[in-house]
Image 1 (cartoon, helix red, strand yellow):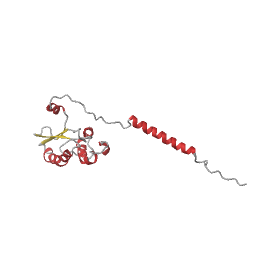
Image 2: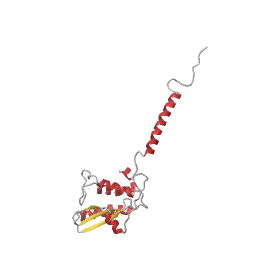
Image 3: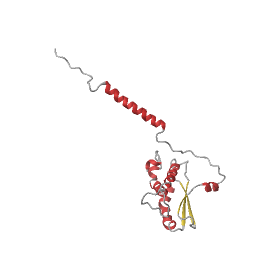
Image 4: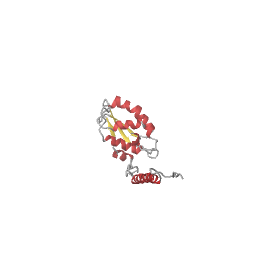
Length: 179
């Protein structure tokens, strides 16, 4: 009588391969969960710090602005800006360049920028301000000249934040993800 071929598992597949693949997936999942729980990428500090100041003038005196132009300029233009504020973005892209070109670069004006994140309505404003300050700790990119002076990357990053504001300001990710 002819022997019938057995159907079912072959020597190259079967349950052994299935459980091997399942094991690799399980190990990968455990590693991914571990990295997520350990905070692999870190997180930025976003909690507000209470300041003990008696007046707005004292707060102004304690704040650290970013300046563009000569310290001895007879006129100071002061902006309190929020990188997530659409009005601040329009001012930065349309008005500030004119002030810098016509007055700062000629030594008539010093432009002074204070970070003023409106945290109650702008979730990413504090992180954007911190990122800009960190950029200020870096040398300016090669070939980038800052009108009115400055040799760090602050103003280039400042301008980039406002140029790309519509892309990052109301998204759920980090500000840094867009750059």
